[in-house]
Length: 190
Length: 190
DNA sequence: GCCGTATGCGTACGATCGTACACAGTATGT
DNA sequence: ACATACTGTGTACGATCGTACGCATACGGC
Image (cartoon, rainbow over all chains, first blue to last red; front, top):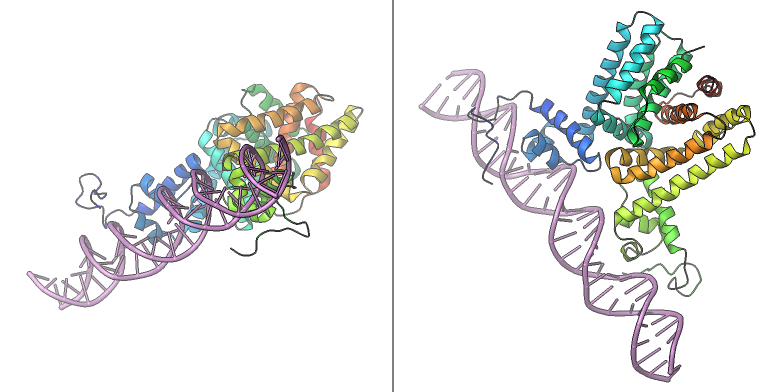
């Protein structure tokens, strides 16, 4: 009891902070990426979002709802980038290049996203409730890929992307970017 | 206090149970696969292994050591199967078939292993301490594959296997086994 | 300016956890 | 047969968690 949150100069953080809920969700993703789902607690998220502990149960009906909303936001964001990159390509060859860029930049370049993906995968692998989220995510990826590839190839390519991500996250030694290019090339050749 | 563990008919579980430690490790893997790393506690593992709580801290210096040993055993086991299947193949074509079989049977057929893999991946993605484990595991897979494929192809193929595993674990709808065959075929064609 | 009402929060409770440690039980050397 | 050393365990402690709930605060009608 003492130093409350009286953020900045505004009188009180009280009523006029409509995106409090959004900030909590973003903070939650930060905490997950640093401490894992298991190490994510209401208290840590509250501290990160700079809101009082009581706000957690006020805005969310328990930890599950918070996690589900956080991962939904994450998956949607990643999915959007994916879809946009695919839409920008105008033929199969450009699409192949887009996939390579996506892997090398969006995936390999973002450690936070790599960790968050795995946290979500693990959750979904064990609890069917989160399966809907990953299933939808993958369906969207496939749809994006199917703008340029046949359905079968789209699924294989999607799997390859995931596999390369894992190797990147779990293997310490650096890899030749050209290898990604070659792999994409091979898997998309019918 | 009351019903201790006096297992079976033997006088006392006391001194004559040399594989207690092994049983704890196996029990730990069971608990992880059912509750996740986050939900794995000394108490649950002890109950599963049918040993008293005090045995946990007696045989292991804390939770970390237990987890590390458990995952080491798991990764070694999976790795062994992988290596053995590759050794059995006598040419590239047989090797391709061996990989397909491995994916369809050993990976797709074992939900427990699928979950455990992801739990380990997630741990390793966030904590470098576990990275040594996954790095060694992957190195061994690559070595096994390099008996029949060039190093570059071996790495791509290994990545593909991981990717297909993920899709299997995270996508609800069943897949055509032939798709696996085609993907392996494409990625191994230079 | 006052008051009812909805919004948001400080705090405390019960549960559960990892871990330490005093002690019980067994084997061994004599 | 007894003393001694070692192996294994029951239990209790401090920390930390999610969550509920009484209360403070700000808003809107009058």
